[in-house]
Image 1 (cartoon, rainbow, N blue to C red):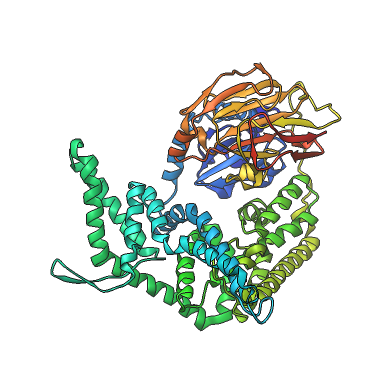
Image 2 (cartoon, one colour; image 1 turned 60 degrees about the horizontal axis):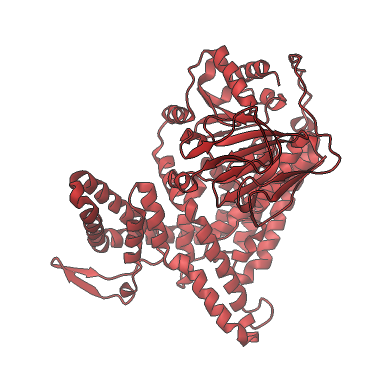
Length: 637
């Protein structure tokens, strides 16, 4: 790669005067720009030195690749005269450049609290779905499954208990996650949630205290009262930590914080917030009941644009209220989940159409993986990686989503639990509505695919633009060694842990395979081993990533954790240096997994073959648990 030329191309594409600050991590340039509208995206997409781009948290990130990104960054700094900054500094600069929006700040707050809870809610939701299948009549016959097979009654009762747990004790989960977000002790947050769901509250009645008659009511399944209570806890705890001497702080801060929070929650905060929560839920149900299928159709047309703003992250808080109300015998059920499913499938269908339309191999590979992800309920790769880049697929998908959501509203299709909002979302649907739900999903896919494909066929230049003018000839350099083996090159796992598909990693660069194909491992041990016999081509000062070139030419990137570059080497050690030859299985360094998690970072280890395009196929050799040194990938030459 001609690093100087790539740096020049990047500067020209984003605008020299448009640059505010720049940093880099193991694989990408991270830029803060004055105006994103001034980016020449087409020029970057056509540049062979650029593997992909995306924007997140006020940063415009350009994927270059391990080893090369350092040199490109050095050239960019040299040509622009910008001051070198760390990724941490860049994050602060990006935050300053973004205008404060109180609505978006509140949405982000809800997102920070509820996103970590989604696995628990989905698990409970799918168990509820299984319970629905066992108890619903007219699904497999006039009688329910347990009526036809009474021996399954005990199984159904156990499933019912398991499925109800995350929702009944939701205030405890909110207490833990909310305390972490508000800066309070998470275990005290759990205690507040436990107080609000205590069995003694279920019988009702009245407490006589402080000269008041305090109504006893349980807050099982409640979200807003729990959020308010744990926020109150955080205020008391922080204030007491500042005011109490160290000698008594450890003992009396938890005591006083919980005591004051409990009194105020039961006397004022709980009743008021529960009333507010009921108004909100009843208001949403009223809108749904009043506008009916017209309302769901409008919602279907705007759901994907809502996802672009991040506002959809607040929906789980509302959905849990709708589901709880429905389980209690009132309310219309969760129609938000149904609309989300129609929108997600429509975006996936549009991306699928692009796969068949495009001739660009880079876009074809991206669209195939992004489409599958969207059809299973995760649309960000499809939205940001494909549909918004080409623009028209995004809007074509809205048509399919609108029509399908209208039909779903007309048929009164509702969800009775949370789950994956895509084709497999039928597991969360009221059993009687499952056939209609699947019909609406097919309609959403068919319309979005057809409209996108037909429009793309008649406007082929939007999908397959004329090739850009060739870049200036790069400086003469020694070509990278191409793999010469006729059999598969084996890549070993650098760590012990659980294997995960690269597409499941919570980072677009890896999940969309912009750097190349590979696998991820959720580590159980922090010792990092060499996955191949070869040469260390990249050994970062931050010790969180390594690049190796195997003796047979395979180029492998090991990236330990997500955004762990911000740790600046803290919690990592290394035992190798750039240029050193290592044998497969040799220790490269270590990572303190507990400390990395405590610092708020995901320690997932990504293993990527960065010259994947030189192989016919990259195949995983194992799944489930793996030990360091076990076969992980095979690169078929």
